[in-house]
Amino acid sequence: MGRCSTNLPHQVLSCATLEGVQEIFRAEIARHGYASSAYRTIAPTGMGTKPQFLFRNWPGEWARQFKEIGSATGDNFAVNEARRQIAPFTWSDARAGRSFSAGEDRMWKEAQAFGWRDAFVLPVHGPRGYLATVSMTSMARDLDLSPRQRLRLQMIALVVHERCSVLSGTAMVDSGFESLSARELECLHWVAAGKTDWEIGVILSLSIATVKFHLDRARKKLGASTRAQAVARLLLSESY
Image (cartoon, rainbow, N blue to C red):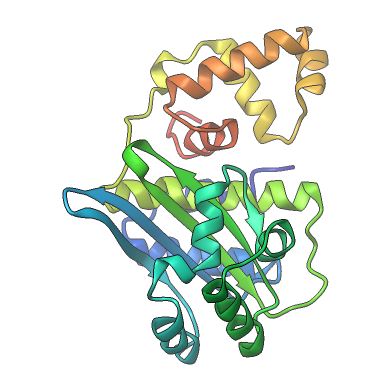
C-alpha cells in the first residue's frame, strides 16, 4: 500500500478549513466508488453527549429523509455499530453480524430503498465516551472490499479525521513526534507502506515481538488507539 494516494496527506495538511478537507476527501473516495461522505462526532458534555456533523455531502433528499428517520441515535445502526467496534466496518458487516432493532431495521430499509448499497465507516474512540465516525457511502454494486482496499480506505479516513479534529478544536491529544525513537519511526513508516509485522521484521532484522514492541510504544506516545491512527498522525506531521 502507498500513502493512500499521491500526496494526499500533504494536501489534507495544507487545508485551513473543514470545507477544503471535505472536498479533497470527496474527490479521493470517488475514485474508489463512493459518492457521499460524512464526518460526525459524538462528544461528551456536562449535559450528556452532543452529536454534530463537521461535514456531510449528502444528496438533499437523503438529508431530509435522514432527519426524519435518523434523528434518534438509537435507531442509527451505523452509529450503534461504531460504538461496538474499534476496526472499520461496512454496513453489510453490521447487518450480517447481529440482529437489528426495529428502528435500525427501518433505517436500513430506507437507506436501501433510496439507493445506497453499502458504506465504509471508520469509528474513532476517545476519552469519556468521545466517538467520531468518518463514513463514505456508495450506490455502486460489487465494490472492492479486499483487505488491502479496506486498509487503504482506513488510512484515507484516518488522515481526514486527524486534520478535521485539529481544525474543529476537538483534537484529544498533542502529537508526540519528537519523542519517537528512530526505530519506532522506521516501524511506523513500514506500516504506512502496508507491510506486516513479519515483513517489517525481515526488513529491519528484528523479531516479530520486537516490531510489535516498537509499534506499541509509538502508538502510546502518539496517544493513538490503533497503529493505523498512529500512522495517520505521522503522515500529517511536517517532519514526515
